[in-house]
Image (cartoon, rainbow, N blue to C red; front, side, top):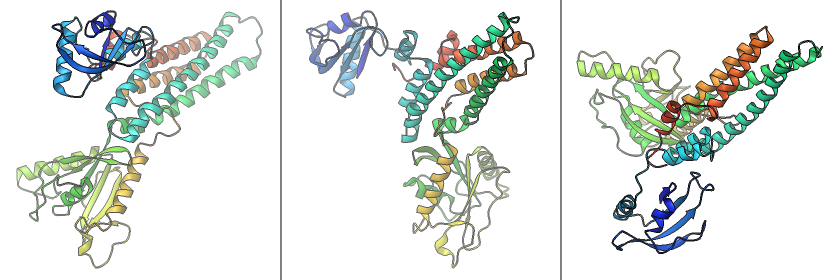
Length: 411
């Protein structure tokens, strides 16, 4: 689908066919270039301003999906006076024309980039929940600020003590609610960005074989020779809708070989940053490598087909026979879902959103600590400004550039 948007969109599109279809009705048209040569038989839909995606006049062409067709139509549009859209330009126009707020625009980018079902839900449901929460926060903050201004402007009116008590109580409730959303933000960020699970163990512990079994393909070289894997080898897998990069690493041991020693160093460094360390050791006498302090760890005994009996307390798998692999995948999926659970909360999935809410929480905390009504009022205004930056009501050009530059071309 090719979209043309802007004040000249109807004229440019109309010059490529015999009459535009009725507004908001798809019509089959022959698209032609300036010489009258037919480029494609396409479905064309016209969306007049302001009721379009961008808020400007829009025409959308549903083309046959060949690269040559796309290139020919694009070339003809440029020759007729259009230009290629920049990254995020359509969504930016929609934001500037009031068709969506900044949170909705970011949700569009996340939806386009979603690779798994959980990421798709986060982009739609999480963003909807955040927008609803912001609307509620804005209204509650507006009422609190109005009450605070009344206390400042009419100090001699003998207002009941309960008025200020209720005001402070509402500020506290708002602070605590937003603090809870802020505390849950790492899970949403992990889901949007994806997790990394690192397989860590001694040489010949079956790490590469396990990675290949989890990936369902030969990603890593497998050999009986210790130290085959020298660098991190990873593959993207979908665990319950959560995107996870499963990473095999060099076998951990002391080595005089500088290349192998560097591989071991990288393996340990990678495990220190991982969301989960899958510590593996081979049967029949498993010896686990030391894992980083504080790391989330799942211990797995590999080559279970070589063991006469199981060691209690550990998962046992055999990548060769498939025994135990189902249980391992279930456990890994449960861990992935636990690390990214965003159900029941407005999801702050981007660093910009987290920073804005952190500023709001800080301003509300300062308001609670302020003794003078005027100082409390000033902090409440600071909280309102930060909330405005979150939704895009208040913003500067640099912030908008940073947000929309991450979009794909056009969208």
